[in-house]
Length: 337
Ligand SMILES: NC(=O)c1ccc[n+]([C@@H]2O[C@H](COP(=O)([O-])OP(=O)(O)OC[C@H]3O[C@@H](n4cnc5c(N)ncnc54)[C@H](O)[C@@H]3O)[C@@H](O)[C@H]2O)c1
Image (cartoon, rainbow, N blue to C red):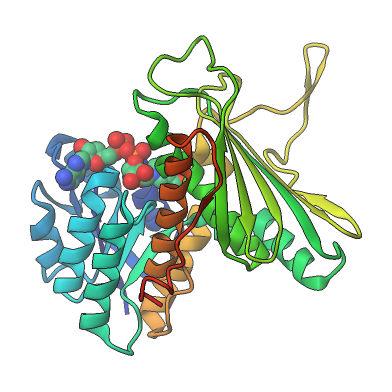
């Protein structure tokens, strides 16, 4: 059975997902594209050899030519479109964040429960680092016990430059990856956070950049997250787990060392796409395989999206609270799990 995918948002990520599905993912076809900038969607449809195009995202969701929806429009549109997919009873892969606020994530979880009951969840979230071979291997190493008891995690995310935004957007849009992946690695939820910052980069005027976030997991691991979205030199993510017996780091970004012009080294990507190309492909492949076989989706869930939103809100509360430690309200305490 071929899964006919409709993609909402044909900007950087929607285009990347469409190309990945079209070129590399078996069992699916990109059947329809939607963007408020309809010319952008048309150009992508032409490249893919003729997907249908509509400017109206709800028409795509309701179309009988679409079996599953991938949402890659702006963050503030996610909740509306995910709820619309649930109403249409269609599986949906929503780019991170599931929604910018925990209240919207709660609404999605309640709507999903009403639609599917005990059946397979329809909502998956694009926390693709869970499919990155480096993070997967690091988690396996942790689970094998060779690192001993995990004590600290150092997670770093640097980008070349960010479009105009805010300090809060750095948390909900960028640090959200670290907020999701570190408790996933440790298999332990984040219970408290503290937001800190050095002086702001003199090159940056729209937000505090860089930011430094401390997070404590339920089993006592201290996690440092450095986020610097205008670091200039390249897209660079790092992750080290310090354990009681040994430590391990992901060695990406690059498989190729290039010797040239009296130098020895590797090139950084200009953004996240080259670094996480395998993750996007493996994530989409797993999503389509789950839909084809009727098995539950192995991707991040709506509950994972809610948990990340709750941690992000606690980080922002600390940002406005002088860096004080802020407790993360338990999702279970809020009656969602
Ligand atoms: N998983 C990741 O690594 C990753 C990386 C970057 C971005 N993202 C997420 O992907 C999403 C898209 O990011 P992007 O970088 O591609 O942004 P982008 O600005 O390049 O693309 C967004 C597209 O959505 C369209 N759009 C805006 N409002 C719309 C609406 N109401 N209905 C339909 N289309 C609409 C815009 O016209 C644009 O083409 C965001 O949610 C972002 O947070 C995820």
